[in-house]
Image 1: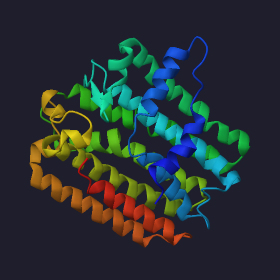
Image 2: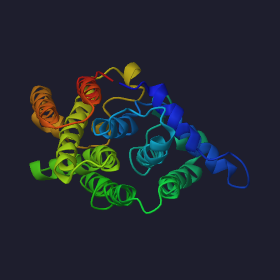
Image 3: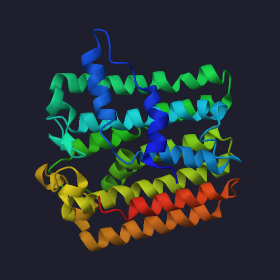
Length: 300
């Protein structure tokens, strides 16, 4: 499994320089991007790519030029979503990963623009793969995935329902929609891009996306559980934020034990699908399985 530092050594190279009239917002963008985290999405993208290639190519410059821009872009999109989630109009959180959120440090106006900047810069970054691999079909298809899964029929769509239903009891269908889109969509995006860039077949790519969906659902419900019983010091953010914001989720509706059972079920399903894949790089599959199990069973 790649370390967080391995991934950061790749994606940090794509951050914009803090200069010119835009420096205040670029500084806020980079502050939020470097605020820590598991680097889950770019890591899963890279491992999904590795599974269908003969070598991991962590040091293979030509292949890395295809994958790395998408790794950085997906983390930029994830970071922008967190910057906006933390805003007073949404979750109004002052701390994330143990440090001040973007709006708490730079003000709400700059935080809004920083989120906008990260989203736009994500696509500017991903487009670098076009320059390195002109007319490459896998790059083109990956760009389409990047443009759709975080959008109105993906992550943003899930966030919209989450916001508009705040304080209202949710149906099972609505909970599934929020979890599938607000959280799982970006993980599907990451792993789907990884498999696509590696040239995996449509059948294998669809299976990888199904794995990602199960991981995303388990990850979100585990997050809901930790929001209730987690250690604030380990989490690096306040607990009981869903209760504070009057938000219902799988754990608050079904209880902690049912939520844990659900996480276990989704975890097993993800592992079973992953085991059934015909991959080129077996060590990469094992690393991805280890990562999935670590994430799902995390306590922070």
